[in-house]
Length: 112
Image (cartoon, rainbow, N blue to C red):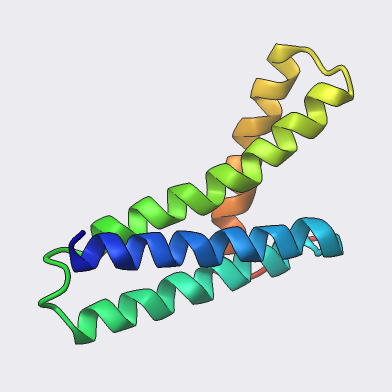
C-alpha cells in the first residue's frame, strides 16, 4: 500500500465515523457536512505540506467529497424508498439534495 492509499483509507474511515455519529445522534445535515468539510480541508492542508505523498491532492479531495456526499445521499434515498416514493420522485429529490449538500459544503449553511 502506498502513502496516498493509506491517507484515503484513513480519511474514509473518519468520514464513516462522522456519518455514524450523524445518524445515531440525529445531527443536523449542516453539522455533518461542515464536519466532513473540515476533515477534508485538514487532509488537504496535510497533503499540501507533504507533497511527496500525493502528486495531485485535488484528486483525493474530489474522491473524498464524492464518498461523503454519496454516503449521505444513499441514506436519504433509502429513507424515501421506505416512504413509498416512486422512482421519479426520488430521482427529482436526489438532484435537489445533491445541490443542497454542495451548497452547504461551499457556504457552511443553507439559506432559510
